Image (cartoon, rainbow, N blue to C red; front, side, top):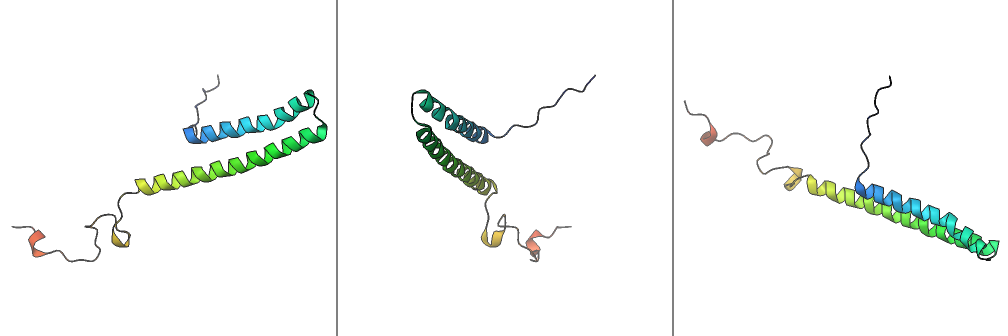
Length: 107
């Protein structure tokens, strides 16, 4: 008996949305020229339309991916926590300082 398959974690919803948009755009790049030829447009006209759609789809895909990377970078910066001067995470994170007498344990 085969072991049941475990589902791999899915992409984030934003990545799924971008992939869906790109898939539909690619489908349109094929469908539109077929419909144009079906309605009597010349093959050259349909091919020109297909090339234009492919170019627009490619540019939109690049812009969407760039937007995703920018949003991920911004989210990572926001989640990294407050950073103080010289990259310290908190105000008490000083290296190499001596303890004052006030913080010494009392016997």
